[in-house]
Image 1: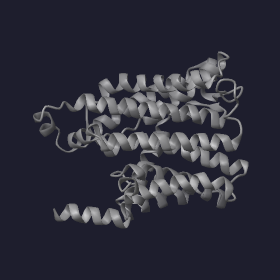
Image 2: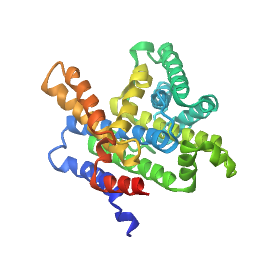
Image 3: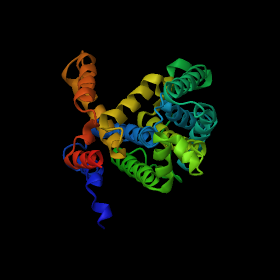
Image 4: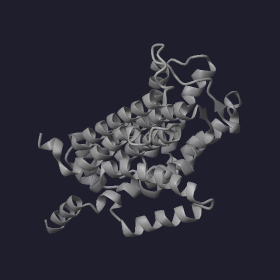
Length: 320
């Protein structure tokens, strides 16, 4: 019970509780539910990316490619007349995980800026491939005939139902990544991030651990892509573009690279701030960009890094 009430768990649990209560506290209209669903879907992808960035030190600029694969699997099956979610969602996860596994075999042979550039290259390769798929609309994208059903039940169409499905999958994704981070698997990843030679000396090869983390993160991003396709009822190559990957990476940095809950908080803050400014002014990007830069400068530990228990933890580590 004590472990469940750790201060480090309070923020994500409060965020999830706030998302659960939002439809009943004045945010139950169509626009608000759509916005919150989008934030939760991107939060899911950001949490999976945080497993790589914070856990393994792998800053990928191609993570949106896995989201794109998940979205386009749903679109391709929709074109074929298959709208059953029990088929589309597992297929999206497996396809994204397979892409992550294949590209990871090459990308994970590098590190640092080389890893960033090679993931960017793979992401752009996929982006141009999707743009060339004329059957799925090419650059114009593809509009779904309808949302996926599950065993004949149309549970994704009602906005409130879709909201809580996204919330449940976000909580499950965060829980899975948190469990992996606290397991021996996660400890090996963090140790390999700091001193890979020492990890190898202890008898652990960092490569398979990193590859498995990359595949798991890709699978979660594929699930997020499948949800995004249903949320928008439309897919386009933009979902797999490098600016979307950069947004996901910034969500992780904004929330706090060193802590997994930061990705969840960073994604929510990013989407809500972006949408709020867009409603206040037409030239909102002129304000949004500098605000994000100021956040990085004055909050180097992210939105969650400056919390009291984080500061005390960092001080204890510094004293040790």
